[in-house]
Length: 219
Image (cartoon, rainbow, N blue to C red; front, side):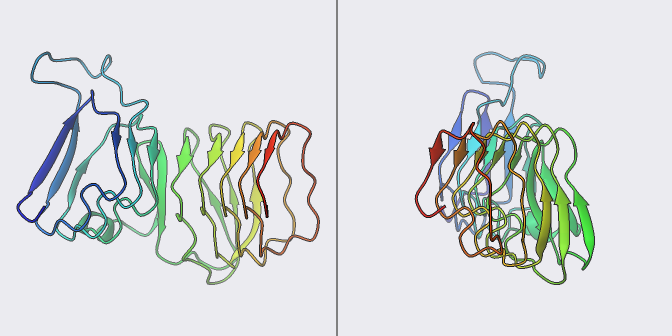
């Protein structure tokens, strides 16, 4: 992909796979469009719901600085835009792409409480796993239904978390290695818990609600 300088896709595309455009050094822009060459659609008709970007899809695209995506994108994989000019230019703090919390940029201040904004439907995998200086707590919004794989994996700074009642799925390794997380209350509508979700954490006891129908090994 050495010669690719821009990528433009239309509403008919539903998924960009993992590593699809990784390590394209001259790629500068990625744009999702709500029009097609055959027929134009208004933004109110053309929706990005169901559109997914896989893990590391644009990883190490060091020249990529222009990203245009719709608010209603459904899913963004781990490290999708890691090591790009776009990510480097993000301000410190919680960074969103549409209704997806992409990453916490920078070091989380000690003894802080983070609030993920209402309307957020997803959190990228590995969004918090690199930041462990000091201790912090976090509240998640009622709009969030899924915690992706490895969201907080390895983050020794996480001390407390408020999970929404609408949460139905906790992914693989979500709280793995969160050694300072001593307690957690799982919501009553939770249905799935991924493998190694709590392994290596500071939890000494956990109550699994009766709503859970899938509990993977080594949770």
